[in-house]
Image 1 (tube, helix red, strand yellow):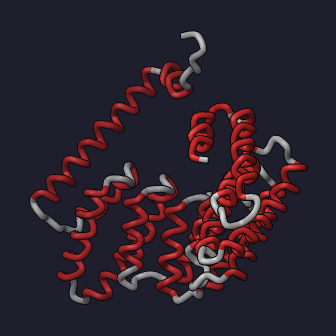
Image 2 (image 1 turned 120 degrees about the vertical axis):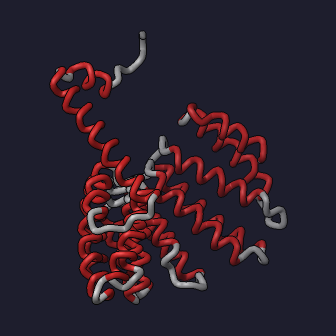
Length: 319
């Protein structure tokens, strides 16, 4: 139809030969045959050594087959328990499991089930934690936003006793490589030492400033900034003067950025929010002007970003 983008996948399907379609059909039949065998073994609660290669084959074809991963864990426990030396047998099977999960993750790096299986092995003390952290670092070099890998790395670091300072340093490294790395920023927010202090949060705002002055249109740093902003305001909520003083200091550097980046939507929207917050502090002079400025900035945001005009219109009404 007119105006519709042609499906790339449909085009590829159209170009396949009969032989290629027959080969794919054969693979599908084989997959269903193996899946049927494995599910029958599970139904009968049969935990034989032959089940492991069958499940391995199936899971490499479909790493998200969580029922089969569950059956595999049951089989491993049962086979290890029957072994002459259960601990040694479990250690050997753990090596196989770590290799299998790595192969599965190379096929689907964001497989919930494969990451869960790997953590299951590690939580039993059956892996080298230092190597696991190194593996995560390599995987994050390939895909820096893989939140499954970030979560797993954080878990392993906790088991390994890695300090919060070292984890924070790693996030700094990843953020400096790419300020758009929202996963690194999120990880950073939960790695900051507690209780949060004003000095620490101001240092974090400095990091945000580096990011937004480099790339003002990237939303990752702005989302992190919103969290920092809220955290600081919670600290000074008992003092209207302190809250207003902080907000005005933020308006000042954002005004400077806006002078350089007149078309930057996120700068305009963030300034609108800051002025709204200032306008809500009625105990401080200038609150009414701030409310008016907030409305003006949201009107400007509508011009810059008409696709989200309804959101900006709603925000104006709240002002």
